[in-house]
Length: 405
Image 1 (cartoon, rainbow, N blue to C red):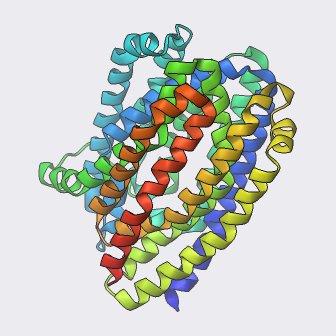
Image 2 (cartoon, rainbow, N blue to C red):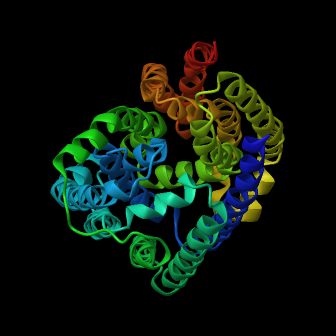
Image 3 (cartoon, rainbow, N blue to C red):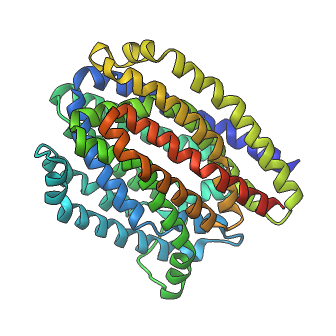
């Protein structure tokens, strides 16, 4: 079938990109873990939490909107670009305004300079040419592979070199700035049309109106994915936050990235066959089965060899991360198995299902996280993540049945 060809081709290219980037992430983490201290990772983690929160809070859903459109999207590019620029400037100003409050909340004066510097990232990202979404919309995954791989490799090398010479958490932020600048500049050379500063109010309303559920889902997803980080940083300090975030990265990336690869590929494919329920049902269950068969062995491997993984990748000074690594590997399996449903929701324009499912998970997480973190530290944060993910499962199943009848 045609959709299977698109999926297989997309999986090969996007899967290759994810494999390459996660290999680089592990390599970068291994190097930086021996150069920087857990507390320095925590300082960068605080800046990352603020940046991600504001990006989610101001998400317009432009990319999702452009992929969902079955007609040509060139008429939307100019307006999408202007909206992105305004959004980037707004996020930068909000970070600068929020810095004193964030520093006080986390009791981390060392985060001040990092927060000021990271405010440049959304400003630069706002100028990226929205036309790059055509790679995914037109299923040109090979072009996206080369484009994003080159950017990520250069950003990784730049970050590592800076960290070795400076031994500072600021080097991680400069890496983000360099990557954002390179992506923005290159986006004008590799895809057309090049946007111009023209704004259509009616088109912008259409984009924002359809994107409101994406914004809501993103906001709830942020809370679901980062409430544990926020409480760990607030209650246990930046050193524990650094331990927890690095353990989270190592334990979940191998499994959730598999689901992410499938999600990136299947979303545009599902969107193209969304009018054929029989074909959509067949594609969805086939892809979900493949995800489960791939992620469960990875998760179990991390669970049973957590100590060896920590010592080999991070070094002996990170040994405190072993127990939480085991817990988070279970969380990663559950999340990876349920995530494919989100591509289905977006493809049939049911963004609200994504929002409702994520909200349910947040409520489950919120009920248990404070007592668990207070009693069990970063291990308790990992357990609360499992509870929150488990709560979403019945909602996801219900909505899948509703869509596929």
